[in-house]
Structure formats: C-alpha cells, structure tokens
Length: 351
Image 1 (spheres, helix red, strand yellow):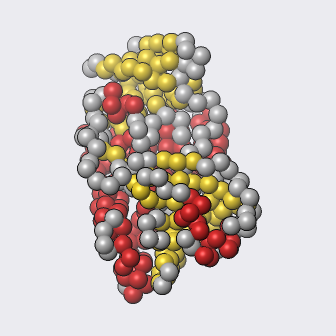
Image 2 (tube, helix red, strand yellow):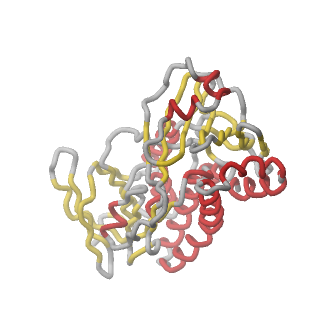
Image 3 (cartoon, one colour):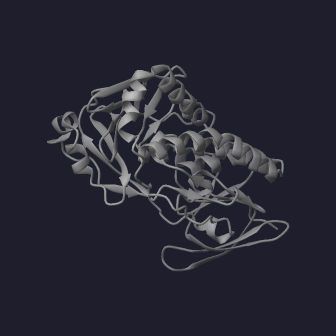
C-alpha cells in the first residue's frame, strides 16, 4: 500500500514544478526537502521565452522584468539578438519558488521536511527513509514512483546507482549576487573577459543580478572590475543579496531512470550554465516525467528525456569547449560577424 503516488525529492523550482505536473496528471504527491524556507541558490534567473508557457500551464505567472534578447560583448566586439520566439523574463529565484510553492499547496501537494538517506525499491514502489531537521527519523514513506529532483549533487542519483564518474575536464563554477541598480537594458548581457563570462540580468525595477562563470576560485568583484562599463555601473552599488556559489557544473548520470526512480532537472545530468537554459530544460523534464509515470512508461521517459535535452547537451558542450580553448577570444567577434548563426543558436535555446 502506497502513501502517495509520487514522492518528489527536492523542493526547488524544478522539484515543485514536477510536483505540480504530477498533481495535474491526477497523481497524489509528497515533496521531501531538508530546508523549510525558500531556497536561494546561485542562478542566472533569466527565464527564456520557452520557459514561460511551461510555467503558465502550471498556473504560474511570476513577476519580473522583460527580457527581449541576448547580447554577447567583449572588449572589441558585440553581437545582439532579439528573441523571435517571444519575450523572456528576469525573475528572482526566491520569487519563482514562492509562486510555485503556493501553487503546489493550492493543489494539495503534501510536504515533509527531511533529508533522504536511503531508498528501497521493489516491483510495486519505492520506500523512502529520511532524517528530519531535528534528527528524528521520517521512516518508511511509501510511493509508487519517486522523482529525484535534488540538484547538481543529487543524493538520489547516487543512492540508485546512476552516478557517472566525473569527466576529466576543466571544472567550471558559478557565483551570483544582486545589486541595487536600475536595469539599463532589456537584454541578457554576457561580457566575455579573458577567463570568465559575466551575465547581467534585470530582475526588478531597482535590481540586477550578476552571475559569473569560470574556473574554480573565480572572484565576482575582480570579474566586474575587468569590464570598465560594468565597474562604472556597479562599482558603487549596494549589494541586494548575499554571494552564492554553485558547481562544478558538469554532472552526468548513466541514464535518467532506474526502476521506479526518475531523475529530473540537474540531477539527471548537466553540462554548464553558459547557455542559461537550465530552468526551461528542468520544467520540460518535469512535464514529461509526470506524463510518463501517469501511464507507467519509464522507457518512454528515457527517450523523451534524451530528445528534450539533445540540443542543450550538444550546443552547450560545444560552447564550453570553445570557451576553454584558444578559440575563446574569437567567440564574440565570430558572433558579431555571423549574426544569422548567432541568432539561430540563441533561438534554438530560447524555444
């Protein structure tokens, strides 16, 4: 006998989206998440145009700032592309998660505060053992299916034997902080310095988010200082949030499911934040995971997952490879000289 149809491990935006999708498919759902409060993590916070319809199907329309395109910039070149697929939105992660949590509660999603320690599968379902924040045992939660949506360093991925050995590549990390500054553009601006990419995303009328991607031990203040235009705009601005970090980005799973456990979002594998497509991809995986468990078709989820992520994995791997090679300094000049190619790549990722 199962307590619920689906246990979702992870209460971030993609975990909550997965829970909502499962409820909309007629399934009973419990979310298990170790933190009681809204989770603020390092995140670029730009929702691509393709992410907004996926949220609207969930009944979510979060407040934010319009994003009309992407601008790549370096010391000697610039390439701009305005989205043809629609307008994106810059949304604080905390704002997005609050909207998703409210919607999940409205739909009757149960919530348990705890950290999953063990899983046991059989032919009919999954039994979950967790530890609550005070150290008490949350034992023997039974579900027909389990979604592992617990991020880059997924516990679930390891517990079910889907962890893939870390690739022998240069590891990339990210930092993010907000500053009190009126947005000066409706574009996601990406400044390519010698060693980092600095992303500027408007998220409120008086706030911009600054995310920096690069190798380990990157420094946000140093990255900003490398771009005179940003230093002039942000050098005297007050921080609007604490500094957050994430990484290493490159994570792999041997496959996206094992028995009755499905990995969703970053837990299922991630390449890099360089294309800014993580949330859209996660919301799409949440949709296909719920649809396939509703009909008991895990192999169908594996195929749909591969199709959903194929372009992201290919394009992001190629871009990261170029960013880590001697070709790095040529990326923005090439984009400015070939605007149709640059635009086609941006559009594909924005859909």
